[in-house]
Image (cartoon, rainbow, N blue to C red; front, side, top):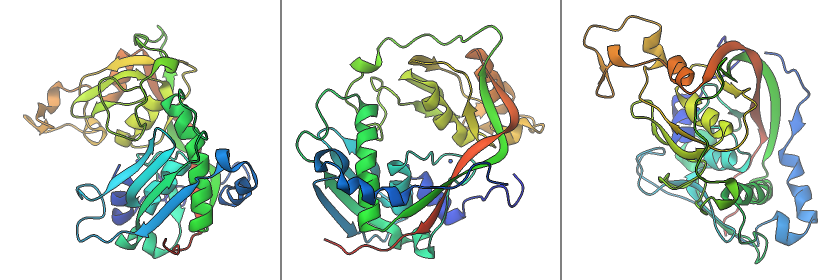
Length: 313
């Protein structure tokens, strides 16, 4: 990506966002300013009934590897919990992919990329606000609106979304059609597993594995696949398959993209596998009946125009 079209995360900000990746072609959309308006709606549907926001003090790393931290989790019964950098909470509230090779969030004061940004946030919705029987994805969608209102109220967050043109990979269906089997479960029957909690073999919309172990998922859609895999691509991945519903996916490990463009040394290994024996990510998708096509496309970026440290309670 050329300078000016995309902005890479700083090393500190990348650690924060990973604990858990140009001309605007449309007008900016003010996101944060809409959240206070939600407070004028029914309290049982738009805001948390009880909230607690406290600065978190730690002597450990501010990202992955600190046992005292855990990412944002939307729990059954309308409970939200996070002990995490604020950037992660913002990403959860607006469903912003944090594995993108392009920084999805920019702007804001310097303290957002420091230990000062870590907060312990606990929130509970009113009885009946999150009905029993909702799928995990529907529950998360409703609670994201509540979390947006919390961020606007307690942190005075104003977030601006812009759509920019940049190099992307378009994920499309191959000429012979998809080769992935349909999942053995429908969306309405998916277990009530927190969408941001640990992956399990029974969970829907969750992957286990990764580049060094291959992909394994019981029931995921194409949006899940794109969000998960683009953590290992060198440009954003955009779903243009048109495929709907849930699929079962299993793949073998693949070659890191930085090695795919060069000739690896003889006997070189990556993730305990011989590099010469690994397929590229392009081949992995071909075996799923999909194709990763380089092209120009639109990507969403989010700019923090205003944010404040909150008063604790």
